[in-house]
Length: 146
Image (cartoon, rainbow, N blue to C red; front, side):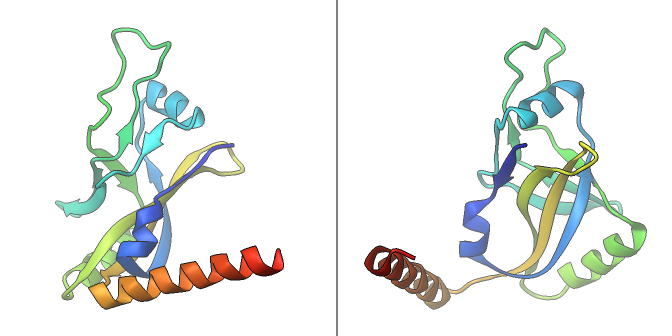
């Protein structure tokens, strides 16, 4: 099973809440994700007419696809409960909050899900602290073999 993570999300944002959302995908997109061919470069979520969409999520074209293959950078709709959508929309209107895609995974039913988080952008000094914590953790692992 493929689990594709947005590694820069935890570095750039402080994540408050996490949600699991479904994705509206085509058949070749599903096959590409199962093959692990997706990337989160500069992807973000936004609201349009009360619906949550993800933009710039790159899902590579399926290698065995024909002329009906999908557009790799098309906007995809996210599926959440109306209650969760309203909650997210009100939190986004607060200053500094944004919806960040965290990972794509396949659940136990075989459906492709997107984990999204409600995050607030980190300042430069917060990023330095993240780097320092990561480096000390790496040193400890190297020194003690943990």
